[in-house]
Image 1 (cartoon, rainbow, N blue to C red):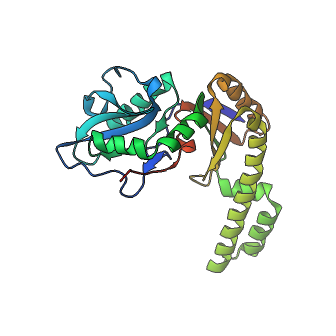
Image 2: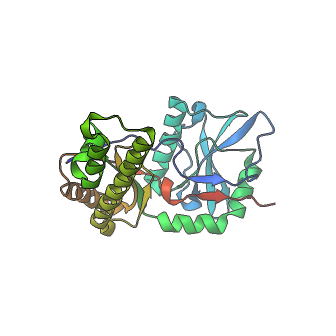
Image 3: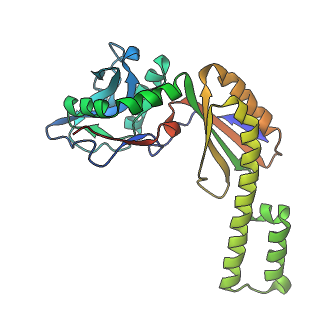
Length: 277
């Protein structure tokens, strides 16, 4: 096995709080309020060191016990360009220094300050509950992949049923029919699913005591064994990282473990926020 630390941030499509249909009014002037995250007012700073999209200042709009961290941006769609993503992540990293925020999905723009305040009013109870749930915690990512030259051939060597079917379909050097190839492909997919579930259970059992919660995301390609998001107490991060190495020792050198973080809890604050009429 190989276990490595990676600092690649989650993609812009990572789960996070998203506006429900109609919850955010489109900007109707020359600018709007770009939303990064929601925080408790007790963790609001007077200044955010000039960080922000397009180099603009970042500041808090406060409503009762909650605040939204925003930047004024032009009235247009925000594209996920490298510099824009870097600015978005920089603000969230700064917020993480004070407390765990509720990250908002990339590219969310409210019309004006009143629009932002209506969001805070309408979702006060839900936001406070989610802030309580993630307080003192951070998200850690763990991706496990098969580190083999050919994933299908690897599975043929470890799965008796798949190997028997392959040998039967190609017996005597014959060319399988299209239907045969589809059958073989389905058998391969079943074998992938079974191995993924078995290995996911093994890792979850090893890391479970170190996490407040674990979420399994769908694998992105055939080589990906699992893609886990783990909600970890901040004061237990070193123990969690040690736990990853312990879990990795349960696997041979055909597997690679890559972990990243700490990140805002993208996968643990999912949901659509509403707006007050």
